Amino acid sequence: MQDGVFVDVSSGLFYPGSNIPLCATSIAAGPTATPWFTGCLYANDGYVDGNHPVYQLQLDGTVSEMQAVFAHNLELFAELAEQLLKEDHIKAIRRIRQLRDQLNDGFQAVTAQADAVLLDFSPSRQQKLQVRKNILRWQPAIRTLLQVQVTAAQYLTRNPLASLPAPIAQAGTGFEKDVAYVMHAMASEVDEKPVDMVPDIRQSAATVQQEIRKYYHDLGLPVPPQASDIAGLAESLASILSPLYEDIRSTFTLESTVAGVSARLLQKPAQ
Image (cartoon, helix red, strand yellow):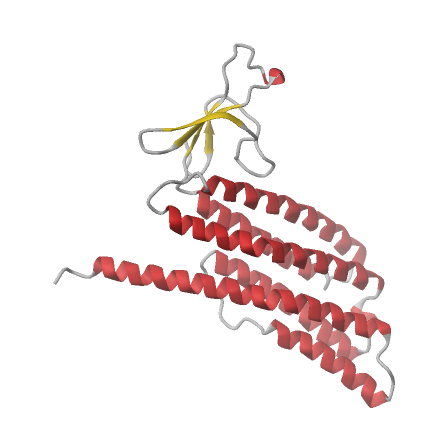
């Protein structure tokens, strides 16, 4: 029996990427308020004697598992951003598609784990529900980031940064490196391992725009569509990523502070 998982006494079917049964015919609470389920009966699953699969849910690790899956999704996103820096564009696009599919599966796994948290009626239920609420609040922004980043990858495959003037290409490469760094930093925050000196992604996007304007202004030329598109993609990513990182960082900083105060209060001797 393992913490944070459904322990299947017989057999069963689960949501992809999770340990959550697809359905249940009944639910009951054991002597310690731990939920027990009887699963659905499927004729092709071998339950010909009428007995249903039985599951016990141990919830101690469910929240930590949900956090771990969410953090892993952020690491996958960072790897996706790093693909835009690869010289082999065909190989990079192939890997980006794999990462996109893995991220979509990861989103489903987080949602499944979040559903399991609702079944937790332990004394720490409210704290766990707050973690669940935070992660589900962040998921839509991560999905939007994925769509924007995949769009950027497709565009840059056809119009690589290397085809732009050197100052602009360098700023664009620096921006993509910063995106990956911030995504790694967010994953570390969710894992409760904060990172110092995280780049200001809005400033990084602004640098791209400044280099584009300066380069073509000095030449007395209008900004061409490709350079304008690069600036727009950078701004779109930064406008989503910057507030998301600040939200995640401040949330886990606050939780860490509250936990530290609580621990000190528990250790303080009675007067």
